[in-house]
Amino acid sequence: MSEGVEWAIHSCLNLAWVEPAEAVSAAQLAAFFALPAAYLNKQLQALVRAGILTSTSGPRGGFRLARDPDTISLLDVVTAIEGAQEAFRCQQLMKSRPGARKDIDYRKECLVSQAMRQADLAWRRTLADRTIGDIKTDVEKLDPDTPELTRSRLAELR
Image 1 (cartoon, one colour):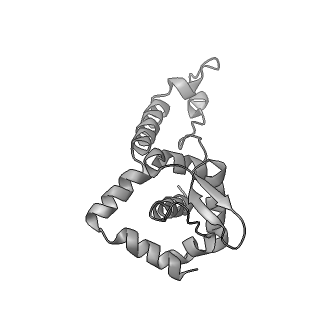
Image 2 (spheres, rainbow, N blue to C red; image 1 turned 90 degrees about the vertical axis):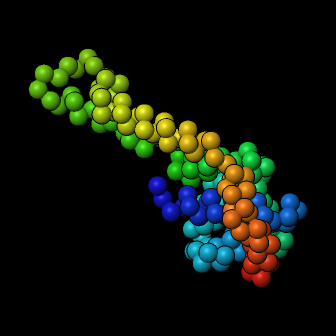
């Protein structure tokens, strides 16, 4: 998984603490964690295409969450950044072994492929079950000052 996923999740989390009418620029979000703005902007644009963020141009433009944080799963963010393909892609190595049959799709029959597909499904279910809102709530329980500190820091970066 690319670092862009981590950046995207943290950006969504920061945007969850911003007032709803407030937009935050890519430069502000990048400066918050000292990230390269151009590369972060690519991640943010992918989130816009996925319907997770909205963007407006202009001097007061920037990014906002397009949906309630409780409806944005971690899987939504991962899929927006990395795509929907499975992490493991069976190359059907079993077709090269002695006694292999040409008429069998080993992506379905191979026990290694089945185990990896099950692991991928479990991983996706876990990500689908956790939302930006869940993480927001957990962070606020650990450090109640985080929302205000985040808003203040983003305001300083304007």
